Image (cartoon, rainbow, N blue to C red; front, side):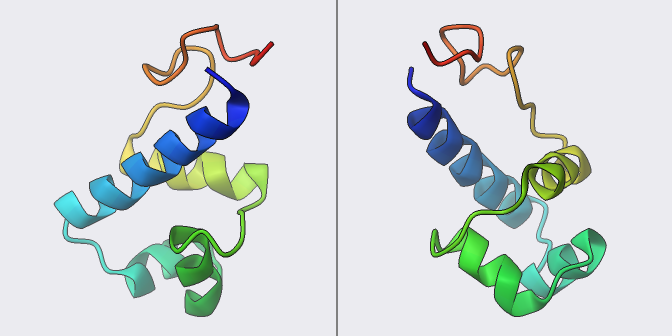
Length: 79
């Protein structure tokens, strides 16, 4: 699995998890310390979060990232 497919799959999982937990975009943006407009651009695929914020976001929603992620077939290396 390429890194881009893994990234898009992770972003979709983050969006779905936020919705499942009934957390608003405004609340999630506040928890991440970013402007609501910035968070909306991330979820709409118009911009990408910095790695640090992506990991924080995943941690807040308990969505796994990295080599141990169920989304990764090649151990996370993408080679």
